[in-house]
Every structure is written in structure tokens, then in C-alpha cells.
Image (cartoon, rainbow, N blue to C red; front, top):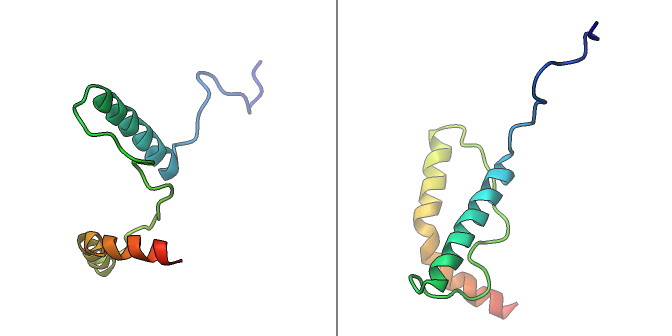
Length: 89
């Protein structure tokens, strides 16, 4: 007789976290990029392809969406400033 707490079938697993998904994506794309560098399809990279961490935020309303979309659109404009500020510190 089975205990009422026992389960039948495959054990369950927790759903992957956002971090798990991002980590898998970064790993897969980095490995593909390395293969393409070896095949001389893409140029070699210096140091890292991906930023080490990421910022996670749930978009809760349209204002949030607009603010984040504007940040993404404008972010490349500030890259030169980021590089300079890293060298100044």
C-alpha cells in the first residue's frame, strides 16, 4: 500500500528561473560564436561576448514599457560615455 505522500511517475522539477534561461542562452550563443570564429565566419572577440550580469524587471504597465523601450533605444548612444567613465575611475 502506498503512503499518501508518495508519488507515481517521474519526479517533478522546479521550472527554470530567468537566470537559468539567460545562462543557457548565453552559453549556447557563445559556443556557436566560437565555432563561427574557428570557421572564420565571424571575427574573433576580445575578452567576453556577454555582460556578466543582467537586471531583471517585470513590466507592469504601459508607462513602464515606454520607459524601458526608450532606455533600450537610447542605450547605444551612451556606450562611449560608459567606456570613458570606466577608464577615469
